[in-house]
Length: 88
Image (cartoon, rainbow, N blue to C red; front, side, top):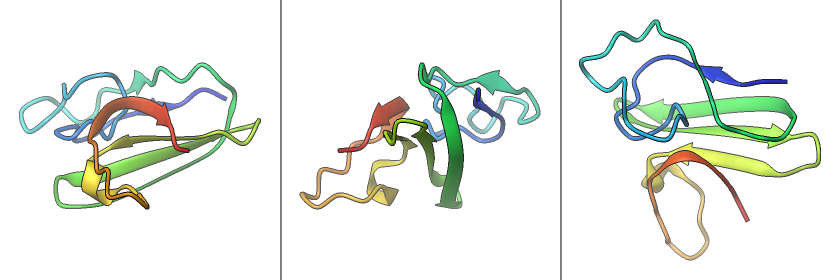
């Protein structure tokens, strides 16, 4: 299915390609996330303004977006992203 997000986006956790919707924008505006695969599961977590979102495609690809230090990484490469990127 399609994925839409709303809410705080100061670290890109909405996955819309930017940080629009940070502290000052209304949190009630739903925007479609740019994931070009069929999604069958989503999850998110965070603490305060530091959050990350996940989406799993039907082919098994896991996409992540948001605050880098909340993302799992074996090599300590904590990169904050503003749009969904495949997690390898």
